[in-house]
Amino acid sequence: MTEYEFRVLNFPRNTSRTDVRQVLADHAEYGHWELARTRLYLGGARRVWLRRRIIRVRRTA
Image (cartoon, rainbow, N blue to C red; front, side, top):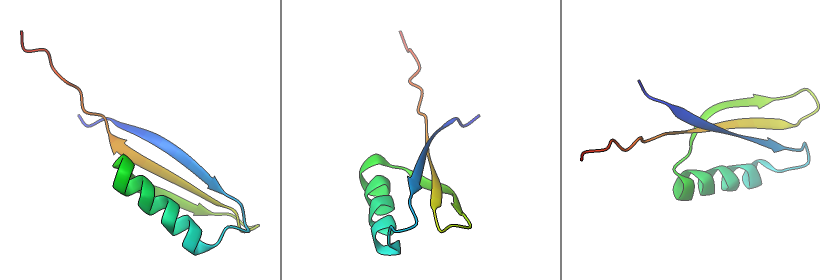
């Protein structure tokens, strides 16, 4: 079974779409995160859930 770890990012309403896209691209490129969910709230705030797989190393000895 695949296990994931999650990270939640909150962006206030005055954050531009370009800035949000740049932050998400940096997380994806350097942290190997992928977009799991995006929520846009009534006041304009955004909440983004990122996920990445947890790789477990098995002992071979």
